[in-house]
Length: 436
Image 1: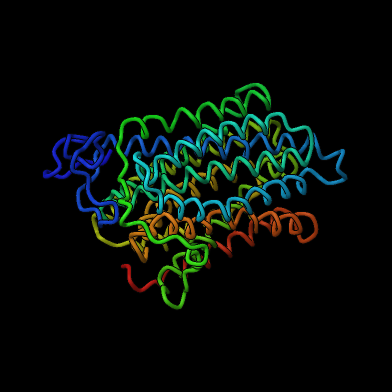
Image 2: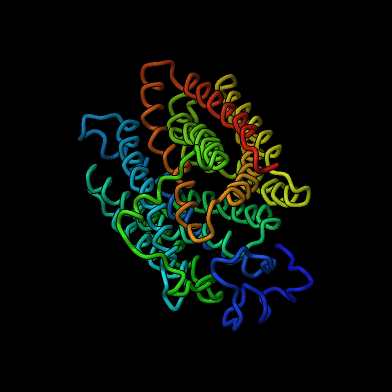
């Protein structure tokens, strides 16, 4: 994990910003200068991974299985039904992440700004996953998935905001790398739990338990920064709602960074949405659920090989844009490979290349985003707005993918479109001026 600087002592020592019970914690709105310790980074990463287990166990396996069961009674294909469910949940996520980020910015509890939302979000997410397990049809499935998105986004917004709260700029690539590693392990773990549990209900229960337990080390061991009442802005609905608009004209670097993240995540969402159906219906793979797990694991191994290294390398050279550009180009090439080499070996190679590129992108783009935040007092809200670039592709991808697969050329055309979108996102990084 990340080493501490000589001035901070051992990781999580009494004077470290990661220590529980520290008596001289830094001001919540100050720019962090002390490097965080290994224990803080590890427990925050575990909490982050737990949230992704709660999202991707359902999204990769369980929702697709339920969609296949419920589709005959709805008059829709399984692809269309899954698209509606995923799109509805993504719409909730679209609003929930910035709203909960803004609420955490304004929270003055004795436990700090972020911790109450991590606890409430993880607990609510676990309950929502159990409710989703009992869904009996389309509408209860939609309602359950929307509740999962609502609650887990409360926790995710707070976890993300903890990084610019506590981590100095030239450590954020490395910490972002560990968070990215936890993310892919959460995706792999969620997929594995959903596959190995032995049924839809058991899969949801396993994901719910891991989601709740995974946040406990962070919230129990590490004291959050408290916002003094005098620092809290005067509340009004007008100012609260107006704060969600970050003008690209006023903050052009933030605007270009947001667009870059949106396009690359849209490309990735188009690849993942119908992966189970691609293996089953296009490649005629004998065990598509197992195939999804294998491809996810291959992707995860190569991602883990680059995510921390890429972030730390970016910190060391003090540059972000070249890493984001070339990782995006590599991902676009790998996506195009799925269109041109539609075989099981081709899918494995593409998954490996996507992991290499997405590993570097995940850590370095996260650090880049924190470098262009406008105000310390709005870190949670602003990161929530940036995270819309993660959620909005989940809305756009089903709307774009379903007609392409059904009417406009099938999976070959879908992956060609995804490759072009990802390449555009990578090249637009060059428009950012305030970050090297």
